[in-house]
Length: 420
Image 1: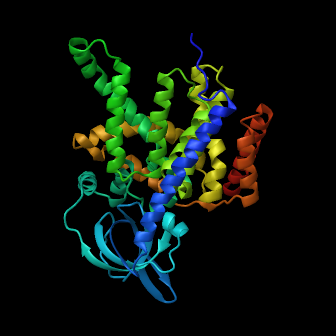
Image 2 (image 1 turned 90 degrees about the horizontal axis):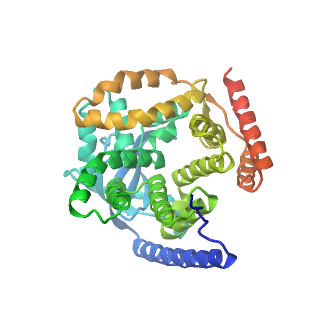
Image 3 (image 1 turned 120 degrees about the vertical axis):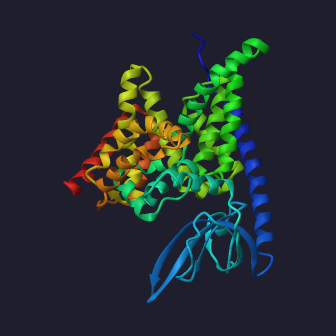
């Protein structure tokens, strides 16, 4: 069997890659800064933006609506509107905004701006039409919202976010590498017989696996653009492309070097990802998967399959507690839900295409009732910082890896103690 080799075998190669990434980053930042200067050239700016979230808030005896929006250049901002404003979630608006004291950092992250809605676009985008099609299969709005989050990256209602956080399955509702992996496998299985027949008849001299990969990758790329390029999905798609290119050239894929290359390249090309929580959570999940596969590569495939979900749950739990601070007695069952989701996701897609997408509605409603109430279980910032540092150091030491596992198990026991 041919031994796969790492991409960089010398310090010189690594240095050249870092310099190339730095150059790309500087170019990307220059482009973003130029857009920023054009954005603030006047006191106000006319923007076309999509409403990502809309919710009611009360402060100082005043009730009003809060809108989170994203324009076509990826600029995300908040604004407020009167209490009586209609439901505009996923609607495209033409607005005039007044971003006061907007600096470059806020431009790359998020900012608040007072605004005036000029026009609510009546024509629905393809993404909105798909959302309407999904809703037509469900009587309950909350169930429709779950499927819209799964298929169109529509933000979940705050109440649903809290419930799924209590269940420990928020990652299943945020489209990421997990979903992209299932979709790519599904597309490959569906296209393989058709392409195999065509190839054997017309061009048997080509590499079927390579051709199918580029075909599937093109379809997934269109899907990523269709969903307005969520950060976690950009990471997953970038890693898919880089992973295949490396694999096709006999280079080792399951390595921290591959993950580092992917993250650095994506941050260089899309500097906004540096401030994206979804991007870093997605990258952290892959980091712990790779850590498991590196240290337990000689374990049988069956044991790897059984233990990997438990491993990822335990090692990602500190992130969940530090960021979301929600936990319930049903939280550990996320290991089971994650395993079942691999079957549920593709089957639910086919059911919607067949017009019977409501088949799983009773099960989802039962799941929503299961963990309406959770407890507040946070994690001290300094403990979390130590945990991240230990995670990085565990790449170089098996002893530290076992210490990391012990710490994550201790945090799990600490969380269970609060709900017992």
